[in-house]
Structures are given as structure tokens and as C-alpha cells.
Length: 119
Image 1: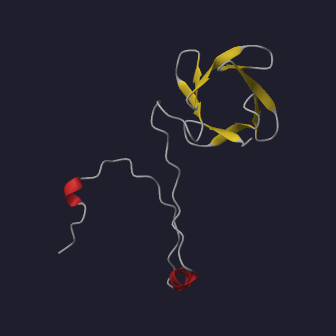
Image 2: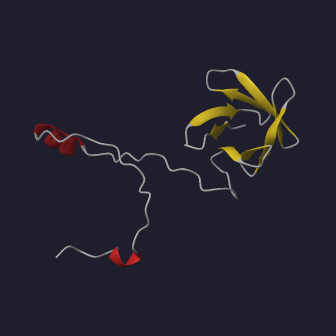
């Protein structure tokens, strides 16, 4: 069975299950288990429900999601890193250009601006 990773609202991996029953933190600490689509602590306290790849708390809020989650809020985007060829990297280093990570754009795109070229 494949490992399923649970992600926080910011998109960071926080826990996993390998058997679709027991949930562990990445340091190996067991934290919860799944039974009949409910999530419980090992002390037996009900934490919420697991359905469609979403873990929802008892108030219905989405607190964790899996890669294949559907039907809930938009999942966050991860930061993007664009790989450059070694020649471009060497050229940039000689010119003192620093590499930077790209972050997802939060605004909307004007469909009329797509394909326009600077004059």
C-alpha cells in the first residue's frame, strides 16, 4: 500500500499513514487513527472526519488534506523553482545575479494581456 501524506493549510507535509488506519508524524510519533471515516487520538478522543482526502475538525473546518483531496477549499500551491541549465547558472554567477525562488501569484490574470507583446 502506498504512503498517504497529510498536508497543513499552508501546504506543508505534517503526517502520514502507510496502512490507511494509523497516522504518524514524520518523526515516527503515532498521533491518531482512522475508523469508519472518523479520526481519533489514541486516547479515544474524536478529532474529526476524513472524507474525499480532507480531514475536517468537529466544526467542519478543513484542517489537513491529502494529494488527491477533492470537494473542499482550494489547496495551496507550493513554491516553484525553475531549473536552469549549468551554462545559464555559470553566466549568472559571473555577472553577480542571485537565484531566487518564485512564489505563486495571488492575483488574477487579465485574459486580454495573454499573448500581447511589448512594442
